[in-house]
Image (cartoon, rainbow, N blue to C red; front, side):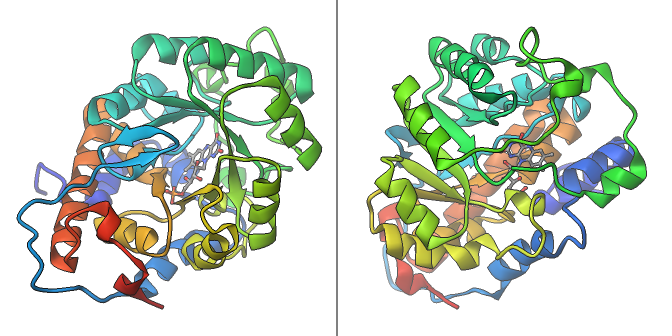
Length: 345
Ligand SMILES: Cc1cc2nc3c(=O)[nH]c(=O)nc-3n(C[C@H](O)[C@H](O)[C@H](O)COP(=O)(O)O)c2cc1C
């Protein structure tokens, strides 16, 4: 076995060797038949690239901006709870790695480090992911705390009205572990009340807009009409997402949902995408189809599990290296050069 992982799949293999089976399954798994989990990957692999040649690609610039942040590459860290079961430093390690690298870290509502602990540990750009667990009073408190701690956007997850049926987790019956307890709800909700039923409606979206000056990003949209509705409600960004195949199984692959959504919103809100991003070429394909940037979930969680903060950094560097090569070989020296002509479905 080579010491240095060569790609994200190698990092996953390293993580798998280290993790108890139930933690590996918790990260890797999807719901029910895992159709959507596989579809996200398959759909990327079905897209073909049409590289442009004879372009001067001596200097490749992967920087871009998302909601006013300048990012070293168009990749953000997706929200993921429970990170202390993956590595003792949990979300702190991930947030620090994102800051060092030059991208946004999104802290999950169900994180195992609190809003304040993460802000203390990292001064990089941070977004706070909100689940409406415990209703508006709890949500208001969390959002206020995030704003006070310097977070720069609220990412409201809208695809999780009910806890989904994740059969690997049901079979494994994860042991209760104190480090799994979500820290943000301490003093607000009992552990037993934190079922992952995060029902939320368009009325809640308007309410959220009224209580914060942070921009709001809706995560979990796959329909053009919902994207248009987000525009009508003044939303600054959406994440085309099916929760990495962890919510409704059988949902459309995100890269397949993207083009119609980009067409519908027509530049009136920033469109991001997550689900199945593992390669620099995946990032190139998503940008070609109109995404402003992508988020990665499992890719960086494998890095965290394998080697903590350094492991997350390794994954980000791997993705950046692959993206740079892909842009050079496709004839795109800058992010702005990546257009719809680069891919065919
Ligand atoms: C272990 C794990 C935990 C997650 N926790 C959350 C969460 O707390 N909130 C949320 O909005 N999304 C959560 N997600 C979904 C991710 O934000 C993201 O949508 C998904 O991982 C993207 O797919 P990918 O893993 O293929 O990159 C989680 C995903 C994983 C793998």
